[in-house]
Image (cartoon, rainbow, N blue to C red; front, top):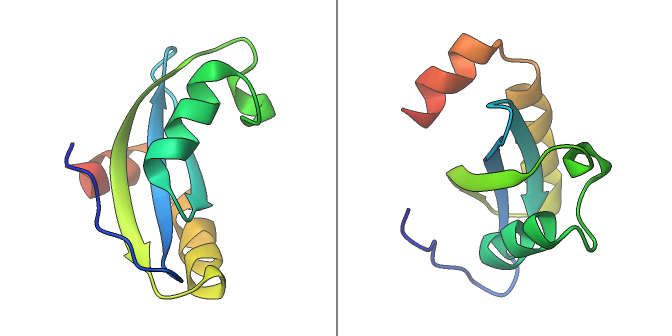
Length: 88
């Protein structure tokens, strides 16, 4: 996956594939750093205790934290098959 370009105030919605093939959705200002945090277990989500963050499979830019949070919530409401279609 190519590294997304970022500006000073840009936020990103991302999806990570876990070791058990589940999909985790979150937001960040730095997707590369956030994946590393999830993989290291330090400052990562509790979701990754008992499973590993394998790869970031989707990144979408948002203009600000508010729109990123709204998009994150919308993605979390999708079914697994809809998320798989989204990530292509």
